[in-house]
Image (tube, rainbow, N blue to C red; front, side, top):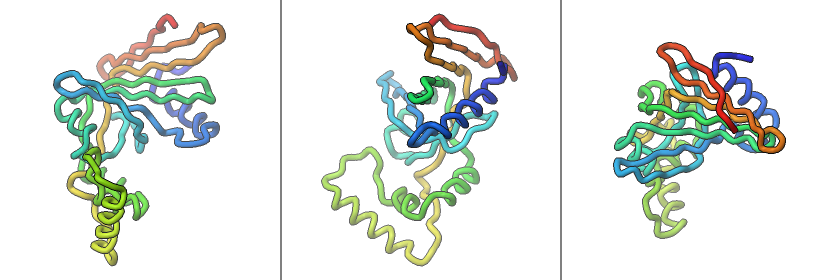
Amino acid sequence: MTEDPLALFDVWLAEASETEPNDPNAMALATANAAGQPAVRMVLLKGHDARGFVFYTNQQGRKASDLAENSQAALLFHWKSLRRQIRIEGPVSIVADAEADAYFATRSRDSQLGAWASDQSRPLDSRATFEARFAAVKARFADVEVPRPPHWSGYRVAPQRIEFWQDRAHRLHERRLFTRDGDGWTEGLLYP
């Protein structure tokens, strides 16, 4: 057994990539605003390393608003086919512009255009309105590379707690909890 939760995460994610039919990198992101009102939604993990777990989004939507008011978040990976989940909790920071630019450049052109066309999380009167905005953005950037919008970036969750949950018969599950301890980790078990 590894005592490095990031190495264990890599093993579990690699196994999920072989068995999950769609988006093994999908994770639930839980945030709360300054008043403590929680919100949870699915996002995609787009990078991870010793610094944390990264996702990207429009900075004018609810996720970003919550994180501006309360820079703590929780992530949950659930791989039903493997009967596993990983919970991650920690403070959140915005990634550097260069990192966001580099990731944005790897997105499909339509995804790049969509980042410009969408007023994420705001009311929309009809699908036709969004499609018209998308067409206008497509025309605007017809002959040039699509730059990253100034209101779009990435967020990094720096893990302070990582729990690995493995289903076992009769609800006698295994729960391994890693807690940040300086530059390292302390490991313990939790009752199921």
